[in-house]
Image (cartoon, rainbow, N blue to C red; front, side, top):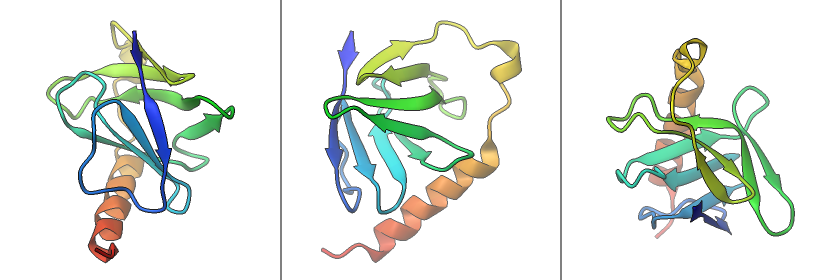
Length: 118
């Protein structure tokens, strides 16, 4: 069982550690390294049409699931109460990604990193 830690930050750092959810409420974004271990950065924008974050004072949950269909690993998992729950198979109806919202989240991350103070 993989348990993730979390950090609430104003700005997402340039270097991401494994097994940590980086949460920026200011930018309404959660970023982490893919739970499968491939090293890819996963960006989950927090909007009514994308992901929702729940913080119970101790653990983090994201809804809906994380589907990394654009990565070579094609990993699919839920983050519930800071625990990664892997999905074994993709349902056929879930294979069409929300590419517009994903691209929007990535553009926000890139823009934000460019404006970051060092």
